[in-house]
Amino acid sequence: MKKRIMLLLCAVCAAALLGGCGTDQKENSDKKESTGKEEASGSEDKKTIDYNAADYVELGEYNGLEISLGSYEVTDEDVKNEVTNTLLSYPVYEDADKDTVEDGDFVNIDYEGLKDGVAFNGGTAQGAVLEIGSDSFIDGFEDGLIGVKVGEKVSLNLTFPEGYQNEELAGQAVVFNVTVNKIVNKSDMTYDMLDDAFVEKNMSSQGYKTVADFENGVREQLEESRSVTKKQETEAAVIQKLKEVCKVKEFPEGLLDQRMEEYMERFNVNLEAYGMKMEDYLTASNVTEEDFEAQAKQLVTETLEGELIIEAIAEKEKIEIGEEEFAEYKKSVVEDYGYASEEALLEQHGEEYIKNVFLREKTVDMLTENAKITYGETSGESGDAGNTAGEDQTAAEQESEEGQTE
Image (cartoon, rainbow, N blue to C red; front, side, top):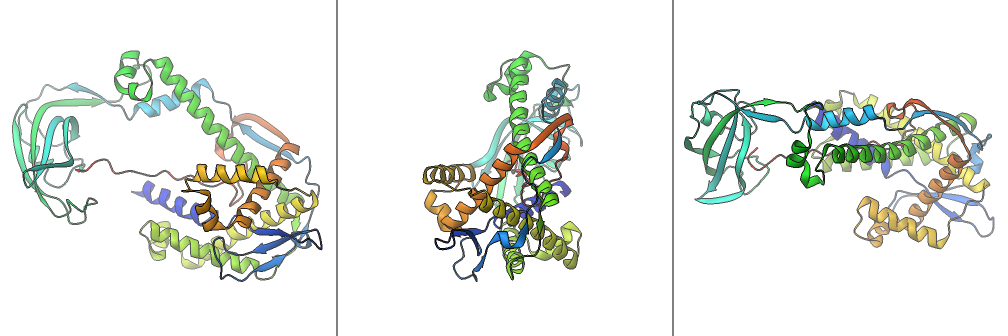
């Protein structure tokens, strides 16, 4: 439960910050300079704040930044560790010398769930292994198998809880017809025990038939993940170093307050999407409202500092966006972030907002290409980059329900 809450909090924080990662910019044909035009993405009634980023930033020597990071290479030991962790999801079951089910046993069962005499979706399985006492199934299911002998069939008259996630079953009376096939002993599959037969039996659906196939697949996944991490942490390190050589003298009047307001709006919207209120979040994260506001302000302030510096550099370097490359960028955003269409993307954020985000990305790419970056011997996964808030987004895993009857 604690892990799930922490993942949830990470997701809420990242989602809230993501919406405020850019400022709209327009080209003034008279002055020929970049002017910030700040308003909440997708909002039409926010006060517009016009500014020229160069007026608020003192630029230092931003070309040739010297940065040192860890290694992002995938080693044989990395592959072995990942394989070992993956195998924890594939336990080995051996027949036990027992004939009567007791609390704590692992039992191999067939079951069929009936509502009004008709089998319902997700309520039927063959050869499922269940740990008695794990509370994996609804109340009464596991207790109803205690004392049942191997080969015996039983009918369990049960009721789904009122708050069950499947509304069609919530609070409904059902019957589970269960056959206890056998009692088994559970053990973990280890790296040293792994063979081709086990891989083909358990992982053929993933395209693996041999241990070599499996290890190669794991290596490819690790390399892809490390590549993404390397890019994120390198860019974060570039932005952190920029803050050391460049200085934001002050913020445009009202911009920080507006950003804070937008951040809090998005934060509360995202909390609601996860079925939480602010008081729930504060309790789960064990922080006071005052501490949360202070942390949020620091987060937004650091993000805004980086944006202003990058905007000022983009102006000085006269970085521009061509129509064709912008069209490709919008297409990639739609695909990568799951928007229904380009129109849906622009309706939510506005074209100028998206264009400015792309402009900042191009600027960071230019700075990264010109930087003197050294990758060392140790793993870069540890966060040596000094991640800048808002630039390296936290990825939150999404936990799924494990079955209708669980």
